[in-house]
Length: 265
Image 1 (cartoon, rainbow, N blue to C red):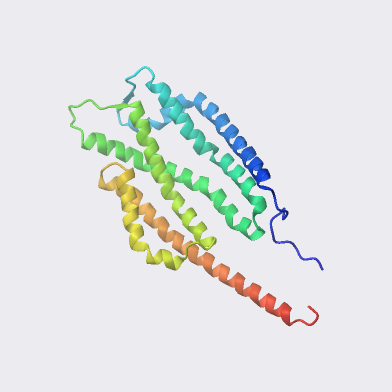
Image 2: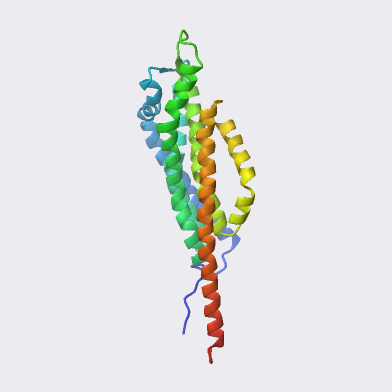
């Protein structure tokens, strides 16, 4: 009786040159996808930027340009960043298509959910930053620290730089459970190791928050607390994964022992 093959879809060895050709093809597809999205976002860059400045405009602050070419470079930078965020699933698909044929079925089941979860968690971090953190940061930095007799005008390029900084910070924070759970799933780290490193994780979270957020306690807590919460969530999910893996390994071992004891096997 033929057993189902649990290995890569194509178990034949592939020459290095063929790997390089396949990699080049996937890179070309990824770049083409990125530039297609870039041109679309460049066309809609003005309404996208108008959307991003709404938290400032709603509170009565104005955003201005102070150079002839400033807004053009703002548009290019914004379009590239948005294209990277929106086009990431397209890039991830190309990475998956390159890697997947060499993976075992069990490895595919391990990686695919995390590949799907990555963009959604990043988008969730962006949403929390825009709707929760950004209005608070703008009011705190401009209404609290700046004297009322000083005109508050935001420079477009500086505003965009701060937005991208916060997007990166909160997008990264929301990727923590995906990354740590994946590492537990493939056996690189264990939940026991994560628990033993909890003190270092706390220090690391506040260092990241201090570097990537404005210099106020509330903004830093707004990033550090989710980082730590996701760290603990990763431990809980990792514990469930380890328990499930242990049960599967035990079941597989029992089946092997039973097959070995069966006469004529």
